[in-house]
Length: 310
Image 1 (tube, rainbow, N blue to C red):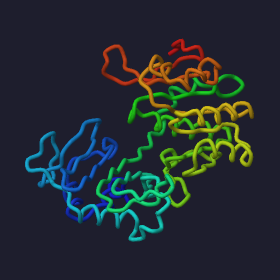
Image 2 (image 1 turned 135 degrees about the horizontal axis):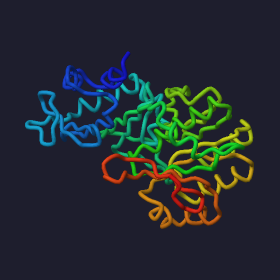
Image 3 (image 1 turned 90 degrees about the horizontal axis):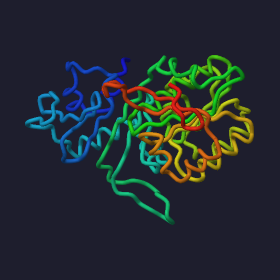
Image 4 (image 1 turned 120 degrees about the vertical axis):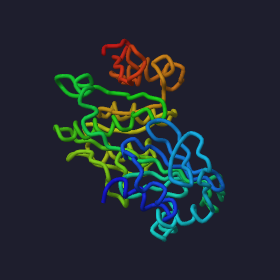
């Protein structure tokens, strides 16, 4: 089955037909959004498009295809293989992971008990975020995060949808296939794209994945049980994350992590990061920037002092 087919089979026939036969490149498709009684939308090549009733997509489709309650209901049935109860724990977190590693964000009416989400009912909003493997995308950066004795503690930084998880995923694959034992704490199931516990993405032959586990708890577990050379996490942010990473460093593990940000200056405005920066927790920073013409996005590389080296 092709990767586009993996996505199309999630939708009812009437939505599926809007995409069939269209000149759509899977690698350019990033999101498909269904909002009840609103136009069907997708993010393609970094731009937002509205899907028309005839299957075309443009900025202002006329008339647009309007998503119905049945569209949402059938899509949820396909996504859960008609066994929504089997995914109750995932739904509590607001998303499901489907074959291929694609993630489906879910919103609707929440039922909260004792400050925790018990379930989401009346699901009315879906965001299918497509998982893309770009094997080889980290090859150019890899020499900059390595030294003769191993790997530098590295933080990858970009705005949302800037490619940080994609770069981290390939970095893990390359290092794992070299010689390093890596433990991935995949809290949001985005790095490995695990489905029923098995990774959908290639993370290399020496990588172990702890799926859907909070980062701080997961780091403690894998350090104690899996003896990794490297631990990898996605989207750190709070004090608990940084404390757990600091403990991993003290235990002798190299850390690979990602974080939302637009520049080194932006990062230094974040209080927990500033403490980590002053303590020199990270030795390399890869920050998403643009080349001199401000056209092509590139990875700017900084050392532990925040000085650009590439």
